[in-house]
Structures are given as structure tokens and as C-alpha cells.
Length: 310
Length: 305
Image (cartoon, rainbow over the protein chains, first blue to last red):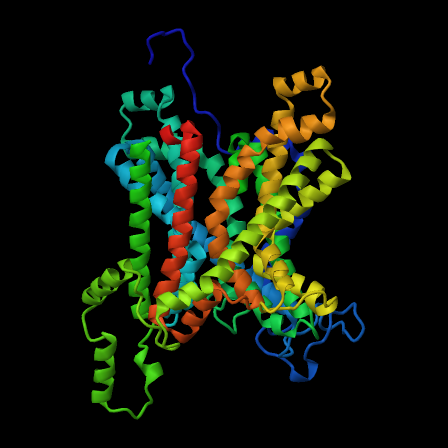
């Protein structure tokens, strides 16, 4: 390793955020996706205060009203009303809250687990690595939606409400599948990082293993982590909405985007907007996340191109 | 090669076994099916008799062992609600799902590959922009919503095809597009970048220098090599097209395995649910295994990775 004293010692590959580099690219910021995402986050956080109507209570005299810009629409219901007379715009705003909670907690739980296990697998290698990576292989081979569907239908009703009831169960199931994506990627990064001189020097200097992992290795994987997490948020939202659509997601009457599309399916001929609007909300949110994630990846870590195909 | 095969086969079997354990115990927790079969006024002894006849009086590990022994022989028990052997129900429904998966596969290649080639040839052109838009929407739109929008435009508004079911030959079109849409996007992206790489190589420049027409260079010389990444990806996603049929079949009431799974879940018909999910998992894992073996055989780099 340090056999030639004149050779420059390898330093950590990147500071966590590379602020200067980010600012230099400020001209190419993905403005529209960022605006849309801020809107979704804002709606989700402030839903109870900004939504014009109660998302669960309908006015039966105002059933299936078209969006405001169509004939027969009213300014009171911007995106129209559904078959029970509930305001679609308010339901979409509240739906953003549900999607954000599910995606946020899923990635928080799954990401943390994945990072810790990925660090351990990459650092210790041998049998620890072998066990963790075999579990990863198996989890990646199981068809996610199918198993999630069975689990939610099986234990959803009886899942303790202190843990969030059926919604809590969905989060647990999704986190149980999503941690592997983090573990696999972080492990690969650690395998590269641990061969670098600065890590060996930290060891020589007497740093403990937890300290090396936390202070010397972890900052090196933060870029990768941010990019992966951003791209996975969209994917979690898609899976959650699919489960809700199939009737095994966030239970009614809570307005979730996926179940709103399912409810609107039966009224396509007379009131197309009931199914269309929440679907558009999913599409725009996930699309913004993908565009933002692609941009983050190109700015922070162009090596990660392969992440896009997941 | 043998070591790779053995390892891969072992992983497939262990995964399938874990899925069976998971599904078996989950289905047991999901509720007591006897309450669906018997009215509220039945006596306790009638209930006990029914449980004994269904084998529900034995302990869970015992029930699982009997289930596993039978499953290996292809016997998944009798559907509680439909009163038919689960195995034969699955076999009745399987062709419809395979047909749907195959059509979606053909659709995703037939649209994704040519569009990918064309958009790589004229970078920044209108066609390239359209291709990029398709790729982005394909990766961001929920498949069930795409299905419903297709149904709205082509069945409800225009009346070109039936909105659901499988009565007409044209009924396959919308479900196949719904299922294949995501893969169109992926094939397009992969094809485009592979073409850009290949067009930059020496042998293409040589072919051009020799005076080969540009049509022949693109469609004969370049395409052959550029096809490798999208075809690899297509193989990997073949299994996903089978399990993905769950959503497309639910939207369009397509009479395949996905719809059967949905009925089983609704009726809490656990022998049926077990059978269908294991059939799905086996199809998914089996396809993935065969594709992996095929590629390991073709491309030695995979074996040693």
C-alpha cells in the first residue's frame, strides 16, 4: 500500500454534497419537476387546511359534476365531483398526503435497514456478506405485488392499529422488499471504498470499526444513496397505488390515488374525470421524481446510469 | 458452468419454497374459511366435522407438510368455493395468461426496437423527442391507469374494441398494450443507447468506407450487435410480464390466472390462493432461471461474475 512515500495518498472520493458543483449546474435545474414536486409536498403537508372540501363527505345533490372548465362544471369543484358527490380536487390533495407518508416511511425504514446491512456486508465480507446477499437474491426473485397482495388481504384487517392498521402493514411489507435495493448498491460501494488508502490510514490511526463506517465510509456513499432514494420514491408510489387499485392498499374511505382510480372505473362512460384525475396526479408526481432523480444522478454521480432501468 | 447452474437452481428452489411457506401461513391467518361455508346456526359438531373433512383440525406444520407432499405431485387440493381441483382450475386459466404475456412481449419488442433505432439515428429530431416522451411516460404512469385510459378512448368513446372479456379476437389488443407498455419504454431506451454505441465502432466505419448503403449498415450491420442489451432485458422481464398480468387482467376482466387470484383473494378461498400464487411464482422463477441459463451459455462473462 504505502510502499512509495512520495506517492499521493488517495483521499475520500467526494465530499457529501459538492455544493460548488451543484451551483455551477444551477442553470440546468429541472424547474418544472421541482415545482410540481414542491406542490405535491406542500399539498401533502397542509392538506387539512388548504383542501376546499371534506374529502370523505360528499354532497349527493352534486354527484358526478364535471371539471370547472367543462359545461355544467362549477367553480366550487375545480376537478369535478365523484359518484358520491365528493370533491375530487380535495381528495387528490389528501391523497398526496397518503402517498407521501407511505413512500416516506417505507424508504426511511427500508433505506436505513438497507444501508446498515449493506455497510456490514461490504465491510466484513465472508459469511456475513454471504448470508445478507443470499437474502437479497431471494427477495429480488419474489414477485412483489403478488406477495404484498396476499399479505395485506391475509393480515390487513387484524393488523394492530397502534402500528397504523392496514396502511402500516403495507409500509412494513414494502420496506421488507425495498431494503434489498439499498443493501445491494451500498455493499458494492463499500467494497470499492474500503480498499482506498485513507480507510487503511484511519485503521492504522486506531479508529474503531463503527467510527470508520460512520465517519469514513458512510459519507462516501451519500451521493449514491440520495440518487437511489429519489428514484425509488416514484417506484414506491407506483406499487402502493397499484395495491390500492387492487383493493389491498390504503383502506377506504381514506382517499388514496390508486383506489380513487378504481372507484372511477365503473363510471368511465358518464364521468371520465373520476378515474382520470387521480391517475394524472400519480403520473405527474412519479414523472417529476424520475426527472429530478435523473438530474441528481447526472450531477452527483454519473457512474450510476444503470439505476435508471429499475 | 456446472457450479453456476447448481447455484442458480438451488436459489430458485429455495425461493420457491420460501414463497410456499409464506403463502401457506399467510392464508391461514387470513380468516376461517368454514364461516363462509356454513350458516350461523350450525351446531358445533357440524363445524368440527367440516373442519376435519377439510383437514383444518390438524396442526399448522402438519397441514403444511401434507400440502407440500401433495403440491410436489401437482395436487393443490380442491377450491373451497368453486368445488373444483385447484390444479385443473389453474390449467384451464393458464393459456389465457400465457397468451396475454406473449402478446405483450411481442408488442413491447415490435414497438420499442424500431422506435429506439429510429430515434438513435436522428438525435434531437421530433421522432427522438416523441421517443423520449414515450419512455418517460412508460416509466412513470401506473399500468392500471394506462389500461383504464385505453379502455375509455378505444372502447367507450370510439367503440373500436370490446371494453372487457375475451369474446372477440380483438379483445387481446388493449390488455396486451397495457401489460407491455412499461417494457416498450425500457426497450426503446436500451435500443437507442446501444445503437449510439455501436454506430460509433470501427467496423461500422469500415462498412461505410467500403460503400455499403446506409440502410444496410443500420439494419444489418449495426442492429445485430445493438440488439444484445434490449434482448437481454426482454428475457429478464419475461417473468415479470406473467405476474404483471394481474393488473391487466383485473382491469379488462381477462379470464386468466390474474383474475383467478383476484377471486381467490375476494372469497378467501385459501387452497385456490395458494395454488395460484405458487403457479405465478413458479412461472416467474422458472422463466428467470431458464433465461439466466441461456445467457450464461451464450455469454461466458455472466458465469464468472
